[in-house]
Amino acid sequence: MSHVKTSLMLFCFLSGVSITRYAISAELANDTLKALAIKHCSQCHTLGQGEGPGNGPNLFGIIGKQAGSAQGFTYSPGFLAVMSGKTWDPELLDRWLTDTQALAPGTGMVYFQDDPATRKKLIQFLQLQR
Ligand code: HEC
Image (cartoon, rainbow, N blue to C red):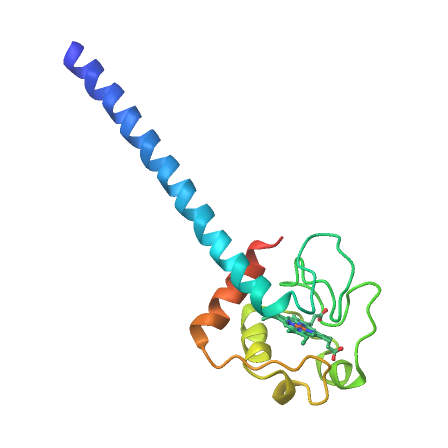
């Protein structure tokens, strides 16, 4: 009996530890993604909920939103001509971040990211922001 009790306690103890470890590593991973997004995007964009536009529109919750729909931001005609009516999903964002000028010629965002792994991380970060 006491052996069962000890095993149970040990189980709870160990699983508690592993859950904490998982939470810590997930937090670290999020911090790494956030740092990357800050480095690449925050020169022109705000990333937090409810923040106003910078040089570009606020990006909080962008995945699932209609392109060109941020309040209080005036988009360029080049952007609106191509992007109006489209919804941001990971695939469209991947094309956008690869070469903004190829997707929407004349857009005010000049950005090219050749590295697919970096694009994937940036998109992962934006997916967490909702
Ligand atoms: C040098 C400034 C600059 C940088 C750096 C920049 N952007 Fe932009 N971004 C803009 C501007 C300006 C617009 C508006 C485009 C237009 O109106 O033509 C825009 C628009 C966007 C849009 C469309 C938003 C909407 O409301 O439809 C997305 C998505 C976006 N940027 C994502 C990013 C991400 C992600 C990064 C970082 C990897 C980034 N941008 C880096 C300037 C920038």
